[in-house]
Image 1 (cartoon, rainbow, N blue to C red):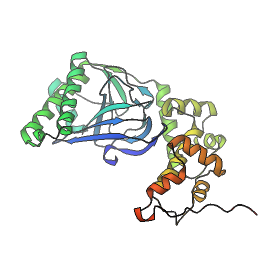
Image 2 (cartoon, rainbow, N blue to C red; image 1 turned 135 degrees about the horizontal axis):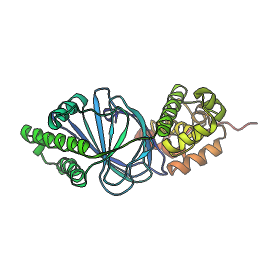
Image 3 (cartoon, rainbow, N blue to C red; image 1 turned 90 degrees about the vertical axis):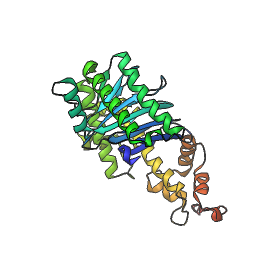
Image 4 (spheres, rainbow, N blue to C red; image 1 turned 45 degrees about the vertical axis):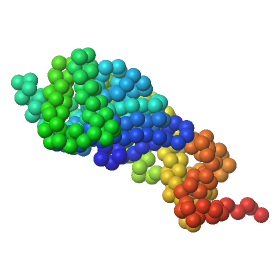
Length: 313
């Protein structure tokens, strides 16, 4: 997911995460589509020379980008260099178009006859219904071709023709559609969530207290809570705890019981009570931590006994 600008992914639903990612690389554009089974939070960073357009693929749960819920028939643009959290609340089928920022500006100016620019901030748009449907149709058609095993887009002329249709439709959608302005309060809460992300990345194993986070970010507890509920769908302490739990989960999946016991890993990432940790882990991932570790072991090591902490005398 790094090529998609994904710097972090935290599954927030309970159970095993299942997803399908389809990517189509054309001459200048890149298309992608996801079908995700559980809600999650993605920390997304758009490359400095790229514009990203996101659009729903059906009428199910929509992605919430930077606290902005995309409505039916709407699309969203993420400008070059933009960083934000993108979260879902259930099964989500989503599409993305990645294209060079200069290419979009050049074509947009030529096609409209006026100066054409896209804001660097995340912004939702409501294109005219027919144009919005055509844009989604072009994206879906390319994804279906690839998923069906067709080699139609391997032909250079076909790929170029699709790109031309996509950029013309996209320019029309943005130049004739209505831009939906993001409130100043939402932009401020986006910034608070980004600064929280940076803080947690510097000390991923530390179990922060609310007062410590507020002091480090220079915000009130109320501001921090409101920002996290809007941007992350949960409070700051819960988000930090889920991040630490995910780090334990990944370590267990790597399956190396010789370097650390389950108890060692739990303590390393700030979980003190092994019983409470195991219960919380099972509630999130649907299995005890020992089962995750066994599955991560090499086939020849499947019966290796896991080291358990000694009981106090």
